[in-house]
Amino acid sequence: MVSSNTFSLSLILFLSFSSFFFFSPSSQSHNKVSLELYYESLCPYSADFIVNDLPKIFEPDLFSIVDLKLVPWGNAKLRPNSTITCQHGPYECLLNRVEACAIDTWPQLNEHFSFIYCIEDLVYDNRQEEWESCYEKLGLDSTRVNDCYRSEHGRELDLKYADETNALQPPHEYVPWVVVNGEPLYEDYENFLSYVCKAYKGANAPKSCNQASYLSTVRQVEAKAKHSFCVMERVTPLWEKTRSTIASWMSQMNLLGVI
Image (cartoon, rainbow, N blue to C red; front, top):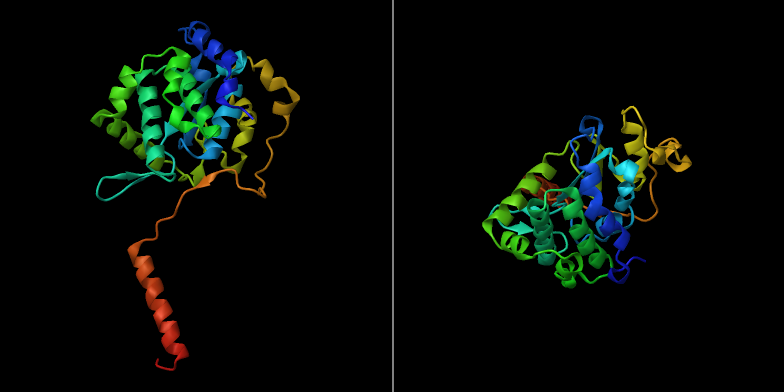
């Protein structure tokens, strides 16, 4: 089990130097595979994926072909009174916004992913209240992110990611919701590297994609005995509730011989 006590120093060091190697103008961005993760901060399966699966893309040859985007909104809801409610409560709303602010403050992937990874590592270890310790661990100045999540700008970022999540076609059904080049992976999201390798159309395929585990045919989605995702709560429209109530009432009246 990964915990904050065994925080991945190698990953942090790699991300610290990756901008020099992989964010240069010579990068062939037009051949990059789009990888999008729609998630919510306190979903245990989102945390598990971010901590134990997603770092696989930071193999040097894979990192150079992937354009990763994180969208921290998940199954949150914007209510008619303009308030935001989150599936795992107010603390999840807080961390969603903190992570959104981190992306906004440090736009480069190598900068914001380390911070988000650190937070989700704590979530995975059920120590999310210690999230501010990630500033010190990574040697980051907390001022800009803290100012952001407490401000109207933080709310604007929430709404931005809400719009992006709600615009998904097909709509997301749960989180983590992983999309490769516009195609959702559904329950097979943990197999995302196979899809990335298959989608890459560049001249030189990464060596990692030649490994047997990635060359195998992308397996068909299989039903899992235990769900490994947080399902979006369905809101029943008022008209549907009314129709159901009337139908139930008529059924009871029919049984009583009234109608």
